[in-house]
Image 1 (cartoon, rainbow, N blue to C red):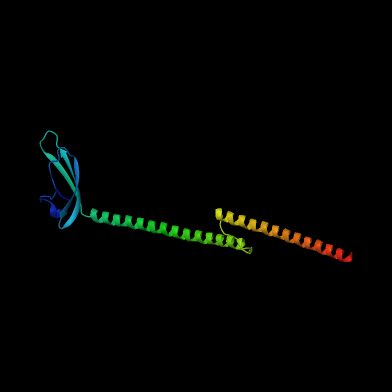
Image 2 (cartoon, rainbow, N blue to C red):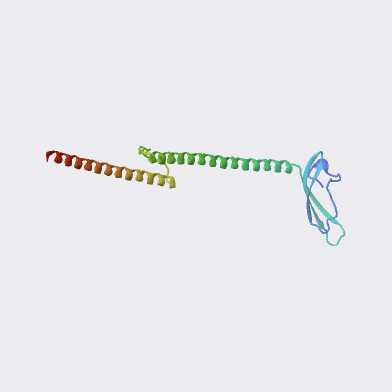
Length: 167
């Protein structure tokens, strides 16, 4: 029997081997110069020495599987590219933020306290930048106190000299 009218009544091209111990088998054959996938099942007919073989062929399964495999590879490649680009963008943004933090720290170390006012983000780098800003404010306040103290000392010395001149 065949589902294709032109094949009815003809001997079917199936790799039929004795399958008494095996109930089914998958195979790939060449039919009309084209690879075809198939499945063969055997059924021992009770009270008889005959075996019934049921075979199915799918001429389009290899094409469908190839398309599916290509689609899977494309999805994997796309996912890999998206992940790679995300890592690249994140690394570049993080590097830029670290460079801003490094520049601000360097400026503060050489006495230039005019650094940027804001640092975007809500992470450890932002906390570190806030700590640097607080340290700079503390250093500026300490320097202002030292300067005021030096002025007072200079004023006392000036007053002392004036008194000595008057004496």
